[in-house]
Amino acid sequence: MDKKQNYMTVPAALKELEKIELLKGGDGDYILDYAVTATQKAILKAFDMTSENVQIQAREISSDLTRIRMEALEATQKSDKGGV
Image (cartoon, rainbow, N blue to C red; front, side, top):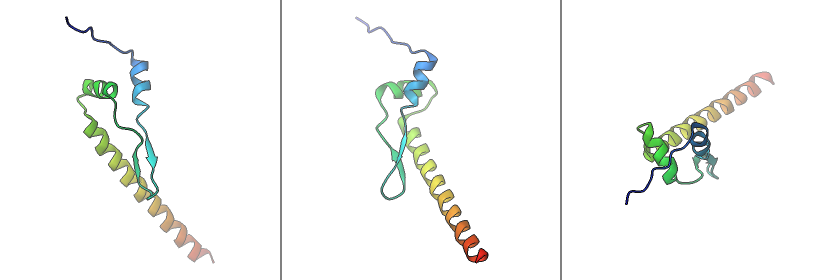
């Protein structure tokens, strides 16, 4: 007996994907809050993506945020030295 496929509405699928979130760790890096669920993997598969794609994007976002934070810190330090 075949199991009937469950299909999600677009809003339900988006809501499920919104649960994928990053948290800032103690070391300042951002990491995935939870592992990608089976439901999220099924939705990602519809877009030819995998949980590995999500991990890669998370690492790239973390790297970008770290770079931006460092650039902002450097700019603040330069303006503090120049403004005194």
